[in-house]
Image 1 (cartoon, rainbow, N blue to C red):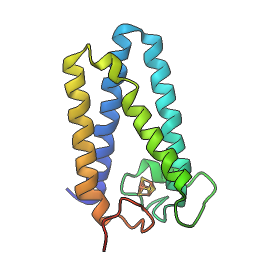
Image 2 (tube, rainbow, N blue to C red):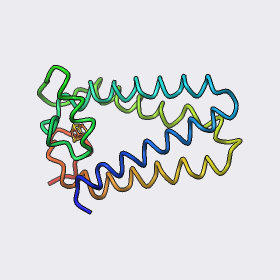
Image 3 (cartoon, protein in one colour):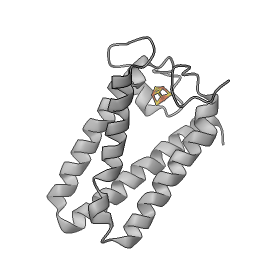
Amino acid sequence: MNSVAVGVFSLTLLTGAVMAGAAAIGLADPLYALAYLAVAALLVGTVIAAFCTKCPLKGKGCLHILPGRLAALLPARQGKYTAVEIAAVLVALLLIAAVPQYWLLSQVPLLALFWLLAGTGVFLINRRVCPVCGNRCCPLRPKE
Ligand code: SF4
């Protein structure tokens, strides 16, 4: 699988994890599940606005395709990431993962599915996408 295919596949796995979380919430209250999906979409938008808009791969070079295309629709920015931008990205990603855990704990098969999908997605990004990504300002970039 080439890097773009891995990038798209890993993002699909992470999306699947969010859907598993939404399914667990939805079993308790479908409206809560919709609220979670809406908040998760806003938080993903925050990541794209804070992080991807500074990435030199935004547009057609993004190894995950979709975030780069969306970032290209926003005003372009340049320079190193600030501590506030990195903190915003970390908080957004942690919130997306943390919010459904309360409901997942009472739905063990969905809990296992969530972490299988999320863990595999993060693993693939870390092992197959980050080492060949051209975003030299990314704090996750392996040291050269
Ligand atoms: S490669 Fe760049 S545009 Fe694509 S997801 Fe990563 S930071 Fe965003």
